[in-house]
Length: 278
Image (spheres, rainbow, N blue to C red):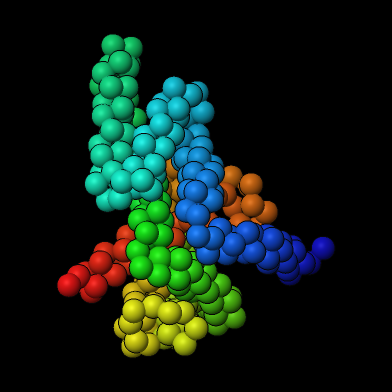
């Protein structure tokens, strides 16, 4: 079998998975009742935390995984029902749970192991729980569903454009030590598409800003989302991981799919809040 066939098969798998997931995702985003979006976010967060925990905390650390999920649920539920204050309180509770676990294991393991575990746990709470909970805060904004769609659209098309432009044009690598497949041409192609899609979205999404602001925001999300992708790649590289799991054929794991999105949620929330303040 030629080398091209497996690549085409993987590419087809990526598109099939995307086509299956797009309709329910859009439905949940635009449904008036936020409980459906909360349920979807909790499922995604649980799967991402499972992958993060098994790869970084260890499969044998079941107790720490349960604490991590408890902290995530505190953060996401706090954001959903009590806004930004509830989000902060939930994050604080999750970090306190991690500290309690540290005090318990200190009696059983050496200091370096304990601090290493706590550091990874806290990273996960900020990176996964805190960042992902911005979905619920954005949903509560004026035109919140449209903003969520904007983020998902720009982030997804940036990733797709970067993949195809980089595959076709090749050229120098963007950061070969961390992500050997990413090229500068792919990065620039993805950012260009993000800029164009951001500007064009002013024609079909009722958002508070004109096409120029949205184009600039799209460009920013293209750049910042790439940093999110590289951030996850650096963690996987340090841990010797290729894909966080194989739950999504052709896409890797849920955490793999959320990497850029996680970085893009908070900036949009703060951007909209800042520019709409009276």
